[in-house]
Image (tube, rainbow, N blue to C red; front, side):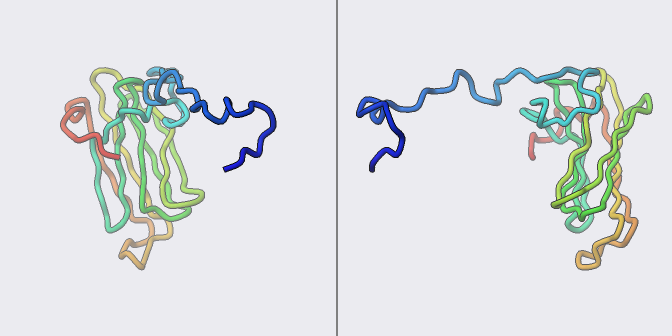
Length: 157
């Protein structure tokens, strides 16, 4: 194979690429608790090591409550959704974040902070429905969790 870049000579071709200092999962999150309010969990690094603490299904539509102990936050995750479907997460002192599926079939809400004791609920609405999968228009899927659910579910998804 011939190198298409100029300079460096044979020594440059023989050297392996430099290793990164630390894997991405070891990165320090960009926020913690209240400073994460309204932030995307993936952008902040809070998705690393997060767990699903509650979930429910209707046909192909799946809603989850995700929890990050690193960031001490929760957010909603909706998969199997259609464009226009909505989701809302709320925590007990009435803090809320909403999200609407714009493209694709998966959506996350922005994060909400939680204390050591908390209660949270997620609701997802199939706005137009999905007749192919027997989901009627305006069908609402709800799930709730609290601090006792942390550690009782696997870290899937």
